[in-house]
Image 1 (spheres, rainbow, N blue to C red):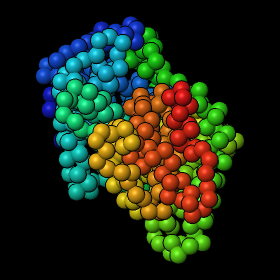
Image 2: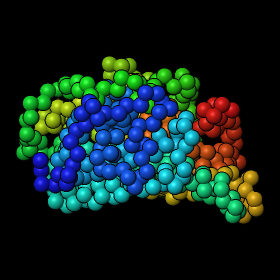
Image 3: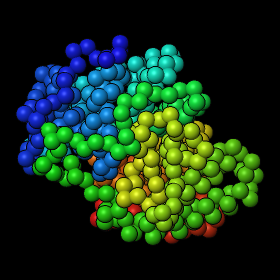
Image 4: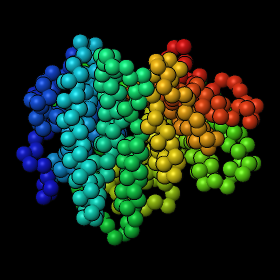
Length: 454
C-alpha cells in the first residue's frame, strides 16, 4: 500500500456482507441510514455492491469499475475519496427516484453534502499529485478523474431536484429562478482526463509500469460482486435501444447540415473574420464527426474518441492492458455515452468560454409565463445564437443516453427546456429569420417534444 493510502480504509466486502436490492423498489441499507451515520465503510461498500454495477452497460468497463478501481482506492486517497463521492451521489439519486416515498429534501441535501466533501478532498489531492509530477501516480490521477465525471453529472441532477422542491414550497415570488446545473465541471474534468492520458502516453520508452501479471482480458468478477437481482439501474438499456434512436439517427445528420448552412451564410459576412465564428465552425465539425461515428460508420471501422489510446500514433505499449481496454472505443457502439460526451473534450476552449455564460442564464420557467414579467427574452448576437444552437443539437443527441447512464439522466431534457425558457423556442431563428428568411421546426425542440410525449 502506498504512502498516500486511505487511513483505516475498509477491506473489500465479502459475499456475506454484500447487500443487493431484491427489487427496484427496495433500497440498499446504506440508503436508509441517516447521512450523519454513513461511514466511509458504508459508502465504500455501497460502491462495491451497487454503484460499480450501474455506471455502464459495457461488461469490460464494468469489470474495471468493480475490480481495478476499488483496488486503486485502497492505495490512493484521491481515488478513495472520488469513489466515496460517487457512492454518495448514487444514494441521492436512488433516494429521489425510488418508488418508495422519497426521502425528505434535507436528507437528500445532507447526503449530497457528504459527496461534495469527498469531491473537494479528491480535487485537492489531484492538485497535489499534479504539482508533484509523480508519474507513478498518473494511473491513480486518471482513475480519480474518471470517477468524478459521473459525480459531476449526477450531482447536477440532485441539485436540480432540490431546487425544484425549494421553488415549489417557496411563498416568495421568484419567477426567474436560474437552473442549478452546468456542464462546466464535467468539461473541466474531461479535458483533464485528456491531458492526463497525453502525459501518460508521452515518452513511453522512459516509463514502464510494474507488470502485475495482468492480461489483456480482465478476470471475471467474484461471486460476491455479481448482481443476481438485476434492476433497471443495474442492467440499463443501451442508447441504441432507446425509443428515440431510430428518429434521431435518421434526422440528426440533415439537422446538422441545416445548421452548417446557417454557419456558411454567416461566413459570407464581415463576421467571418471573428474568432468566435471560427470556433463555432470547429465545434460543429466535431459534432458532425461524432454523429457520423455513432450512427453511420460500419461496425468494422474505428473512430477513436480523443482519450482513446488506440488512436494511431499514440504509444500505448506502456499502458497497463486493463487501462488500455477500458479506454478503447470503436465506432457504431451500442453504448453512446462516452463518444457523445467526448464533444466536451474535443471542442476548443474558446467555444466553451462562449457558451458557458449563456448556459448559466437558463431558467426553470419560461419568461413568457413569468409573473411579473420583469425581463424580456435575452438578445443574442448571431454568433452566440449559433453557438447555442450547436450545443442544443448536441443536447438532443444526448437524450439517447438518459437511461443508459443514470448519472446523465434527464440533464439533456433540463438543458433544452432551460434554453428555451430563457432564449425562446428557436433562439437561432429568432435572431436570423428576418435576415436569412429561414423558418420551420427547430430540430432540438422537436426532439424534446417527442421525448416528452408531446
